[in-house]
Picture 1: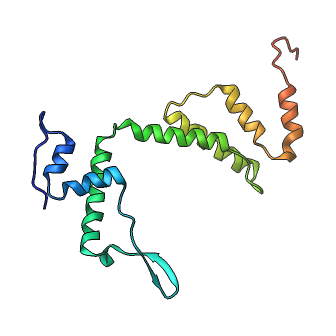
Picture 2: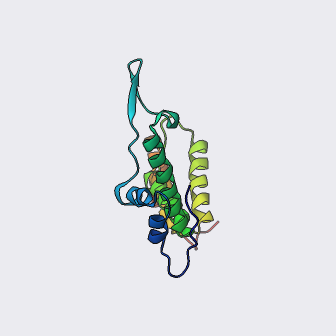
Length: 160
């Protein structure tokens, strides 16, 4: 069991880990990566060992790998998760395309949901980027209409 060592101005996280029981194992996890769980063959199928099947030393290492992971995660700024989400949304926007057999309505709903998710994170996109992505990702059978939309220009002097 780890001894409780308060983190003060003179104690660094590394000192805490070194001074705690198995602290060296926590630092090893950080420096060298976590335990690579052993595999077993069972009825011709290869699988990773379950926690209960690990040796005593492997269980200790797995436990301290988890502690190291938690220590690292606690030290990350809260906005790192929103940055990760933003990256995933930009990636989804870049890769957005029509799915074969998908109705135009379903396509529109998926696209709208993506744009709404981006708006939740205050991700700013120019309207022309959104419009262009929507039109260019439509299936080929809509290409005639896409061309028509691209050719239409707003004319304030249109007479009725």
